[in-house]
Image 1 (cartoon, rainbow, N blue to C red):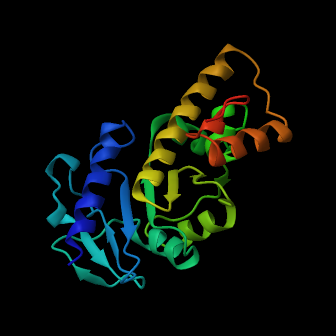
Image 2 (image 1 turned 60 degrees about the vertical axis):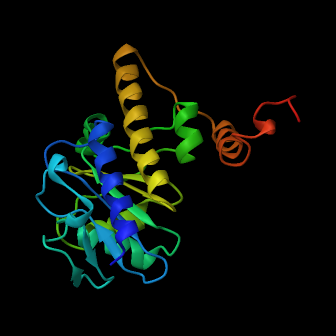
Length: 222
């Protein structure tokens, strides 16, 4: 069942330790099949080095295991809550990446003081409240606070990212850790300053609508 998606989900999960976003068995990635509505998610408690596509678990949107020899991730309920409330989301990721989770530990959003934050996130990376693991409470916090951002911090927990594809959700997870690291170091160097809203909007529009085209730079055309 959903063999191709299992391979994609397994590869997406394996990308997380490659990018230094998870250790041991922590973190998870899932993806929703648009045809069946079923979700493929990482198994609970399995080492990344030992995982294969056959280990991925298939669940329905109500949390019933449809196929799998392992239990699904302990964050399954939160993933499913997001899918039920965001039709556009096709992949959800959870990590405890070091620098972004340091901001989560303090309950602070990551400020939009860099063009890289404006580009990818369109503003500060929000921080939701604390929620119990293994429940829909995390999903509720995500939906209440994420807005248009592809990433959110959960207070005293970690990071969640979403995307219309696995690749986009992984990219958001990589980028949120990257900007969190840079801004953490910047605060050691000196005071940081938020970008003005006009600059945030302009950078996000350029990145989302013109980046990768001939119009990405002013004065350049085909």
